[in-house]
Image 1 (cartoon, helix red, strand yellow):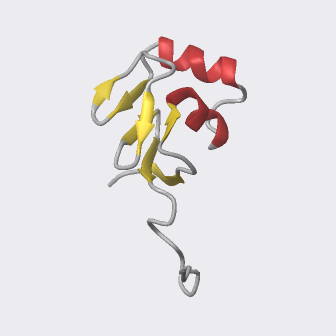
Image 2 (spheres, rainbow, N blue to C red):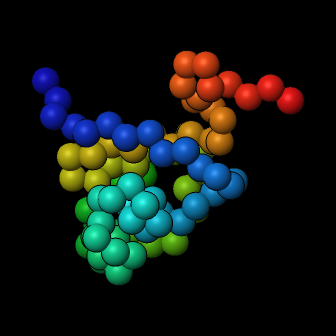
Length: 87
């Protein structure tokens, strides 16, 4: 049984820096706090502890922070029902 909070983060560009995901998803109160928890080794990316605050996170990456799991997807990769876009 797992109590992990699962989050889907949708990228608006090719990549985003790791600390910004923690900040934007509300897992850190500020960018400074996000940078500190990363530096403290509390965040892992794709199963490995990551201490680079500005690590480029791309679609397909998975981030774990305490009891939160974030799946990173590209823009438009997971539209909800009836929300698909047509060209």
